[in-house]
Image (cartoon, rainbow, N blue to C red):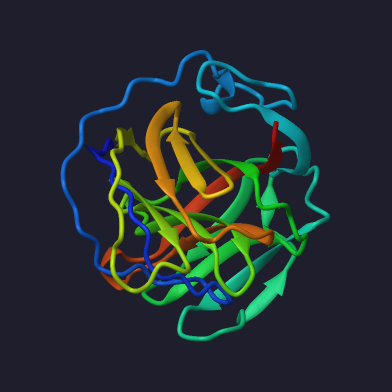
Length: 250
């Protein structure tokens, strides 16, 4: 299923001791952004490496977390956490379920979430790269979050049609909407979401398309996660995670 839609971004309240629930967002259409220069690591065909850079203005520094779910390497420092989102603590934790195709995340219905992450306290200024492929026709929410303590800096792909930035310290109402890009999220292809923050500025790319920059208040070091959330009307959701990598900003 090919989904093309305008991606939006905003910041809203986010308490990340458990996976957060998005608030109602103010939405408007935006033009499609152009691919981001010669930064090949922004696209799923390239292998990200320390020192990679380009006209997108982003440089990958030292690798801090390099979990390759297909090869099975770098997984010793990550774990799976399953959630009922109404609770503060995970209902279960353990090794990440994987095979030769990748790590497998599943959310069984409304109010459930499954996430992969590390207990490592990572620096605040990072580049996080997630390669993933939906395994069901529609996945309600795919999330990358970092700078997590009791709150997180959050990047959400909602219903395979828009991307939202969320900040945990800006109050309960949307405070900023920024330009985004048309996105293509499909169960027939691998997608790469690249998210980064430097100081108060956060930016995201999906498959090489720049989705814009937003100012954030969630600025400290913390944990990083990749997650999916279920929704009862959409049925069970599943995602194959190929890799989850965290680099310092160069």
